[in-house]
Structure formats: structure tokens, C-alpha cells
Image 1 (cartoon, rainbow, N blue to C red):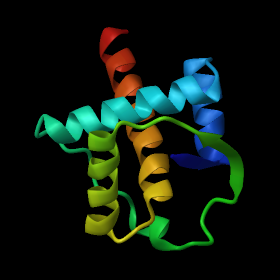
Image 2 (image 1 turned 45 degrees about the vertical axis):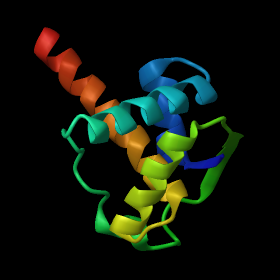
Image 3 (image 1 turned 120 degrees about the vertical axis):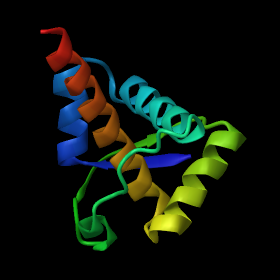
Length: 107
């Protein structure tokens, strides 16, 4: 599955996770799908993501995504009326926010 990230999402992974992009995005996707499957669905993507002009592409990756995870991401895209690529970007932000929340509670 092709994943495109804007500059903000790319920077978030690089700065917060200090890992390569593919590993960070894969972790974010697993986290996002797990949240949905567990009934703790993340906040919906913000409305501005519907604007196709939002976030110029900064990085493109090709990731292997399991069929069941792909189906969940595609369902989310239909539900929120945004492209799958924007669901993936949202998944990155949800993951980073959840990590930040955990860090704040542990501090």
C-alpha cells in the first residue's frame, strides 16, 4: 500500500520516534487499527483533511499492509469521506498524540 505523508507527519515520526519512516508509519498503523478493533476508536480525522490541498506530499513509502488492516483503513476512509492516504496520515498523528499522552502521565 502506498503511504504518503506531509511534512508535519514526517517530521513528527522523525523527531518523536527517532526511527526510520517506514517503521514509524507501520507502528502508527498497527496502533490505529488496534484502537478501532478494541472499541476505543480514535477521534475522527479533522474536517480540514477533506481539503485535497492540505499537506503537500513530503515522503512516499510502499508498505505491506495486511488485508484485514487494509479493509479497516478503507472503511474509515469511506466513513469520513477522505482518501485512505489521509486516514494514514491521521493514524500517524493519533499514534504520536497517544505516545505523548503516555509520556506526560509517566513524567
